[in-house]
Amino acid sequence: MAKGMIQTVDQVRDPLIHKRINKKPVNVNSVFAMTAENDYKVRGQYVNVEYPGLTQKISIKLYKDMAYFNEVLEDGKSVVIPLSVARWINEEMGYDQHSYIQDDKGNPIKMGKKIPRGKFIIEEHLK
Image (tube, rainbow, N blue to C red):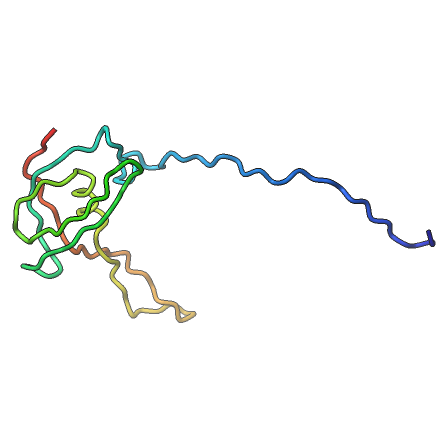
């Protein structure tokens, strides 16, 4: 081999193995952390906040073993639904309010205010 030439050495490396990611939810009181054991039916009344008097279709599956929930809720009618769906309606169903205020770079500033689309008033817990 000539002087000053670099000789490469091939190193055999094991393939990267992904470590098991912690699958436990961080917030155990979250709607998405519920299980079939602590989810039960509730009776209550749906209130459409965004468009009063109209119906709202809810199609959702919140946790692994939950049956797919697909129902049309009428405004002001009493209905029996799972607690997880009722909590999702009250806590998560909405949109973030946008603002036209911009920072120095021209990016919009987030307001951090969530506007609800509907509310579910729980009248009775059916365990």
